[in-house]
Length: 391
Ligand SMILES: Cc1ncc(COP(=O)(O)O)c(C=O)c1O
Image (cartoon, rainbow, N blue to C red):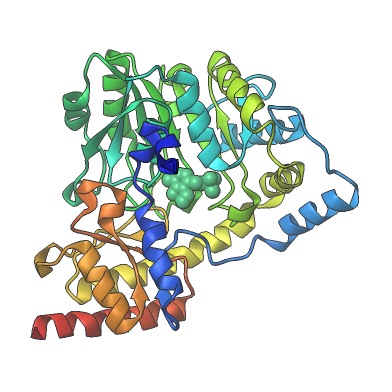
């Protein structure tokens, strides 16, 4: 009998399964759990956006689109990005519509990496960054960020990670899982290092609309950066459209063209129904986003205070819908803590190690959950901590 597993490519076999999904397999088999787990808005997509998708079906809009996506959507993206992020992209050749930011990220990495090229990213980070680099035959290089710095990446730490093989810097602000953000002057320092070492930036700004205070600055808008940046964005978080699977990338025409080649032969195009809904989101979705942001802001204020009050030190996330408290003082691994909490109090949060080694002493609590559920979860967590203290 043949060993079927031996057919699996080595670089794929070496990638671990997502720490989040593993954990939530356990959660799904435990009734009565309050989940602060998977990072997904608890709101349904605003009705007028759903209606646009229904209307697209009614009109028989069921075909392939241009590989780059509907021109009308690319025009709407161009206008939105210009007014929101202060960067101009030509809808004809500098924007590609993708199947979520997930595909945009994969296309960008596959389009630019030669085997062994190094990709620097800040950690803790979104679970798919390191595996996506490996799948594109690159080498992931993590730069650890600290709670004391608000989980911002420093120019000194970046500089220390650069080698002659460095090609790409991946940024994600506001950050999943920490909610960290970067100020304009901090980004300017990073941009200086990027220019000095001739790096390309991939900036994933999927949480930018969920910035609660301070301006959100895109590194693409800084002088001399648009020509060396691929800007990735999407609809999943801002418009609660995760299931539509729709996102986009903007960048210099030769890079978008290279990404288009990979997309053309792998995905062909994003769903036309999702593209029609995305047009509606960009043209008329701003007030729905503002309402959801306000709800997230109120929940954030509550959860961060509750965590700190019960003795879990938690910095104030300025964006995203994640709180990232430290459990370092408890003498347990994050996984042990999360499993104990699940077992005794039926509250699920994600052990920080899922987001890289520098997340080991933290847990991620997603507050894209109803306020009453968050309140109950905090009561249960407080009770669990008291139990731990009593030994
Ligand atoms: C930082 C980050 N980037 C990308 C994604 C994937 O987004 P999409 O649904 O657009 O593929 C997520 C999803 O959680 C995320 O947190």
